[in-house]
Image 1 (cartoon, rainbow, N blue to C red):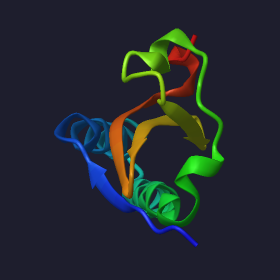
Image 2: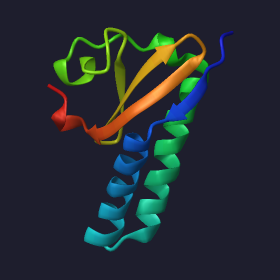
Image 3: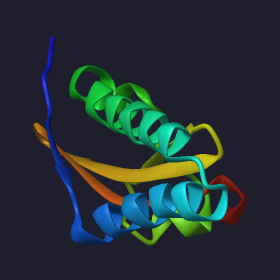
Image 4: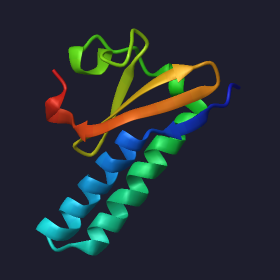
Length: 100
């Protein structure tokens, strides 16, 4: 079985922290924010074993990262990534409602 290395871009890291800070600050819920962070990172790192099994996207917002760009959701967030040989690059983590 193929195994992938996961690289989270600076943009995706910023997206994740903005999402978590929003939960923590706006909803005053640090424990929920922590659970979301753990769940989101678990989902991202689960790509190590099945990154290419998710279908290549046909949506414009995802395809800005190339013809092999893919996305999947965690709660109401979309994780946009590409696969290059044994490497997965996480480009963005955005609200899934932004994917058109």
